[in-house]
Amino acid sequence: MANTGGNNTTLIARHTEVTGDLHFRGNLVIEGKVNGNVCAHSDSDARLQIVDGGVIEGEIRVPNVVVNGNVKGDVHATGHLELASKAIVEGNVHYKLIEMVKGAQVNGSLVSNVEIDSASEPRMLGFSAEASADAE
Image (cartoon, rainbow, N blue to C red; front, side):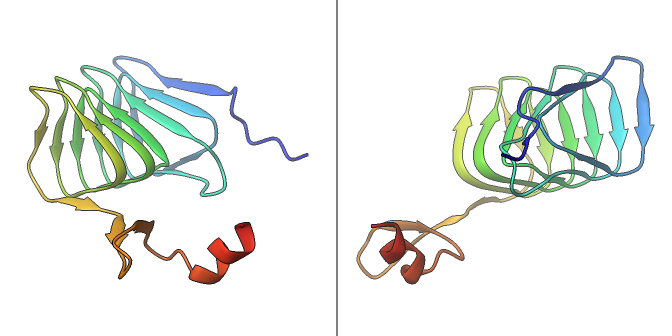
């Protein structure tokens, strides 16, 4: 069985600044600043947490995201997205499932990755009917 890195946690500590794109599996906690894009492998159940005081200036493409800091760029969460009370996002937010707490700010568009098909049932974009028939 392949290791998805679910138990690995990487910390970018306060007063630390990273310049460049980050690619990871497992968990990534940002307390400092990242100038670059943050991406998780699409086959993983990765989780990104940006704590109060943490900053990302770049695009985020991670399945599960918790924001309680600042993001200057678009956020793409294919799983769960949580915008906590001190979250400030300056960019578009693409999500499947979103939780937004009072006080969170989004200066951009909220774009759902779930579309309603002709049967009025939600389905993920890019999800084929053949795949659902195979699963049954």
